[in-house]
Length: 320
Image (cartoon, one colour):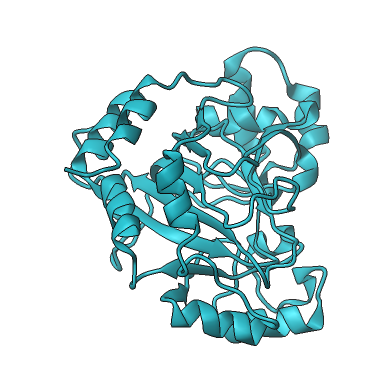
């Protein structure tokens, strides 16, 4: 019997919020005693007078650098960026289009070992069949695929971590974020933005919706506006990615005494972490969608007009 089973009922009974897109938002998600035990654990309260000392404290307590979107691939590159106090990643030699969108590049850590009993129990609940079955039912997701799998873990995100607005890739069935910050500071600049496209970019919703073979991608911040931020500690958000689930994060804060901390996880339709995995969707970038002036001349309310986008987009019908 898992002592966190009570959260399953909270998820089951929660009502969906529809703006800016369909998601669940539950405050006071964990019982106060459980929450206090988690955030007061020495494992969670990592700190240092410098980045080197912070990194040492993190790794001493079982936190390991974790490759994650919006982060550098190596500790050394992050350290160079941090020490140089770069305001933009434009000086990076990387060519990925995501890098052009991010003003900073951060670092994430995951607690892969040394979990306390309470931490392991909470994580295991999210990895278990009861949560999986409840989530698939709650969000009306396909439960028959043999490839459905879950990843979940405690993560910390340091200064510079940023993911530009995006709806998540099509292989992702569900995502959740439980805020477990050791200091409750809702004004810290590291909270997740829930967003919508500005009026002059809303045609991209239809592009993603009516051309399901195209992979959804990151887009520039200035194309979007924030409707909601998940600021409250001990709150959780859950949503099933679709063409409307725009969200983003830009962490700029003093991380030496406390760090943005979450229990973060996903349910996947396919085994994307398999070394042999190949996406069946056509890659795209925000540049492929930037036909605002040309599209506005042909835009009508009829769905069939979207076919004209084939001649406007730099995307072929074959995988690149």
